[in-house]
Length: 259
Ligand SMILES: Nc1ncnc2c1ncn2[C@@H]1O[C@H](COP(=O)(O)OP(=O)(O)OP(=O)(O)O)[C@@H](O)[C@H]1O
Ligand SMILES: [Mg+2]
Image: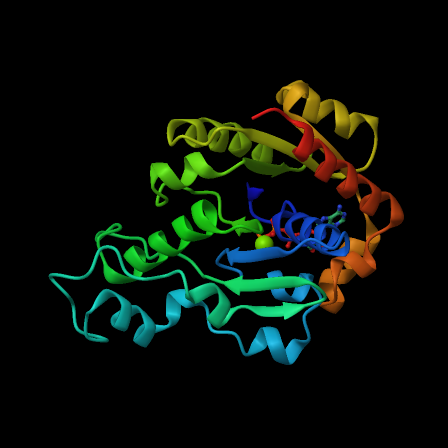
């Protein structure tokens, strides 16, 4: 499975991505967790030792690697560069592994006037394509809201995009926007996970806005998950049994939904 995780800032993307990765790893399956979010805190949520996640440089910031692969000079603007750089060896070279989860910190695309036409974005685009199209293991991507920079072949190869929502109109409005954008760029399946649900009212708020048949889970408000962030520890160890149960159910629902 190749699963992207998106949603408004602070809804719980990183928590859900980590829990899902850890549940899959504890089932004995290989999982590659990809941090493609500007905040870069997937390693902490996955319970990697501090000295490990603090020493990781995102691929997006590896100037020498980017230059070498795109055949450009570091720091010198390039009019021409290789548009299909070799990337297949990058995951193995740069991932860190902890309790069965491999973590690859990709970082984020450069945005602005130049758009996508630069060596950095070209390397990242090819790397994301490789991760989603070619890898054999399960890949879970903690992403920012936008997917526009990924090519169509890449988005079409994603098994599902999970949009995490919390009971609140801003998060729900963005979920609708992501849903529309995702189908425009060829994502086959957009599913929703509600997070931080406190009561029936919260559930109702979500179901009034989103299609029930595409809701694959409701995670309750969990003090344990909140505390994991405060203390910087593994979300799997901190989550309540109810949250872990719900993540297992989400995993089953992912496997069960027809593509
Ligand atoms: N079910 C939950 N119950 C209580 N708190 C939660 C829950 N899920 C996540 N949180 C808390 O909400 C905050 C945001 O969670 P998280 O970092 O996973 O979100 P995010 O969407 O990845 O955020 P960002 O957009 O900053 O990357 C954290 O403090 C986290 O501990
Ligand atoms: Mg995050």
